[in-house]
Image (cartoon, rainbow, N blue to C red; front, side, top):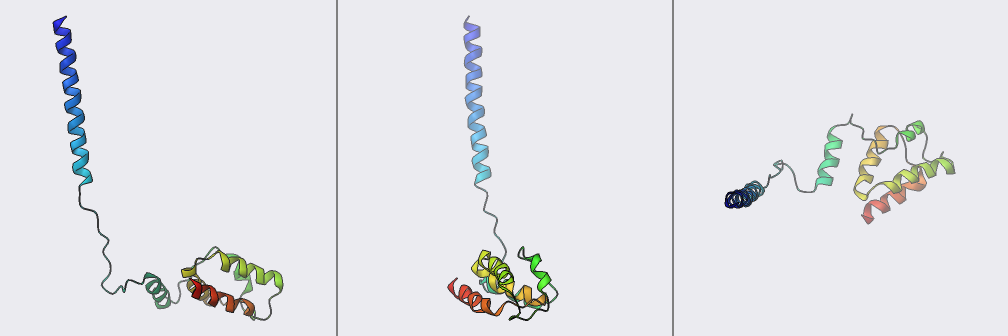
Length: 130
């Protein structure tokens, strides 16, 4: 009977020791220095500006904002859109975040799509707001 109690006590001590060692190893792993992101030396810190300038430097790059359906409006004059078509543009415009509007305007320009004239002022207003 004493042997059984000693075995149980030894197993209990091993369990506590194993748990303690496991916790120590986890703490050591969590204390590793945080990984730092290297920022390019030419980055000004205004990432929206840098992203836009990057788009300008790559004139062939076209970024879609889930607006592929607008491609059918290529080469249409800004005053030639009907109300339904204007609403399609407005739907896309108002789903964009403020920092995306400038990129979107450049994107549709590169796709030879002209923003309906009535939305041009709205787009500018939204960019200034954000």
